[in-house]
Length: 119
Image (cartoon, rainbow, N blue to C red):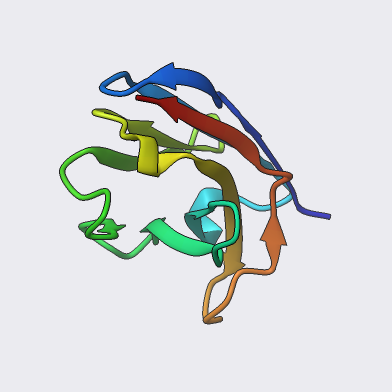
């Protein structure tokens, strides 16, 4: 069974930084595709960053490019989302997701962590 546990969310002011962590068990990072999604109130859940074992460069949505970074630590089997220059519009519940190699979707999700950015 695969489990994803996110941590690191919280309430910050605009311009601050946060680092989200996603600890993965039951599946290695080398054997999976990882992504971070977020869902703001009344909006759909959107992918903002993804990391695949074969990619040299990670994917970042235009809305976070230049401010957010996704990375993985194979030894800790943990994926991170470093968020700098946070804006009020970044306020959302952030979810970590894992997908099997060779598939197009994500079959395991974390419980979500709230990020709130005040102006």
